[in-house]
Length: 293
Ligand code: NAD
Image 1 (cartoon, rainbow, N blue to C red):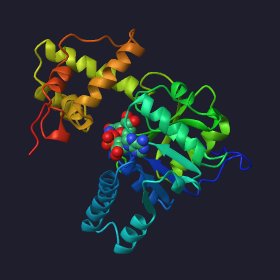
Image 2 (tube, protein in one colour; image 1 turned 135 degrees about the horizontal axis):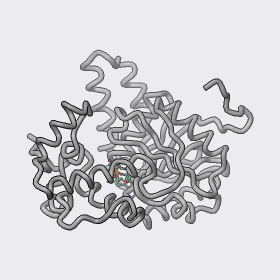
Image 3 (cartoon, rainbow, N blue to C red; image 1 turned 180 degrees about the horizontal axis):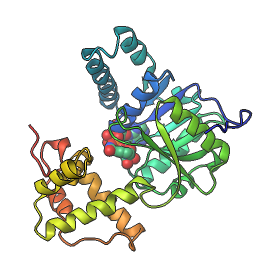
């Protein structure tokens, strides 16, 4: 507190671009627009763009119902999001946030293509949850302008953004992304590149502990109740896994177990994997630990 960032070198972010209009890309585009930074939202398919826009409209619609959003704000926010299928539309972006599918190959191609379409001093970030930032940086000619910018789901409600510094990321890049995060109304934390970054590095060993409790015979509803009522957390681990999604959780758990085996071992018959294999994915398909109506 009290220390000001050096004015001279922090790049001003006047226009954002988001690649991928899915759960995260749509949420990030909404958040940028509602806080006053115009944003280009690029996907490879029109239905995906329509879905991203309708998500933003849904959040704004709920805000209007609660009297928190005026029709003027709704119109301005939606107008600030420019959906596109063309790379050309991102050419004026100061900050590009990649939020396409969690696949290192696809992300590598998208990042390299992005670099060909933006200015030399544009900043490029990835919203990846599990892929190493240093690995992704290898697909760029100028990795010094690249870092992780990891939002949490749902973007409009979760305050934290992890900013992940790669080995080649410059201080100026980090300063600009910190400023952009604050501009988007979020709380930035800067972390180094490691499996799970900070939040998932804490969260997944906790999930693993929960899985072991279940294998020892604990009742998941009882564990959730204890965490909510006695511990005071907003939700217990079973409910949180249903929110995260069993597919995402199963994948992230194996990345963590490979990356930090001293903190997290693979669990035989992990209930999360059992549910995933049974396609009980959680809230996203209506059934996980709990059934959703
Ligand atoms: P999603 O499947 O909902 O959306 C991905 C979008 O990317 C789709 O609309 C798809 O059409 C689009 N896409 C695919 N290839 C593309 C390309 N070449 N160019 C442009 N768009 C392309 O996925 P999601 O849940 O929004 O996740 C996106 C990223 O965010 C992943 O890296 C994921 O790890 C990360 N993330 C997800 C969560 C979460 O809870 N869902 C949380 C934090 C971070």
